Image (cartoon, rainbow, N blue to C red; front, side, top):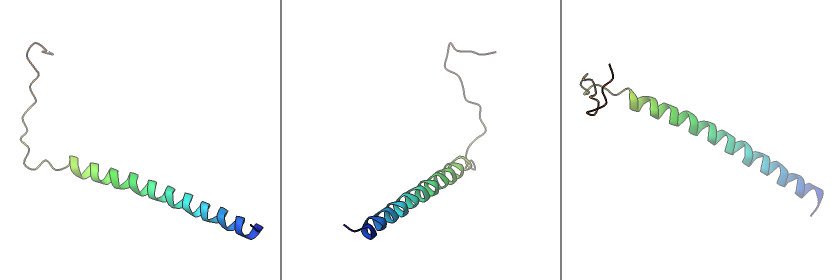
Length: 59
C-alpha cells in the first residue's frame, strides 16, 4: 500500500464514524418524538382514578 491509500482509508473511517454519530442523534430525536406523541393521546381516556389493590391503602 502507498501512503495515499492508507490516508483514504482513514478519511473513509472518519466519514463512517460521523455518519454513525449522526444516525444515533437522529434516532434519539425520533424516539423522543414518538414517545411524546404516544403519551399525549388521551382523547378517549376516562378521568377515573386508579384503584390500589386491596390491603394497600394509603391515606
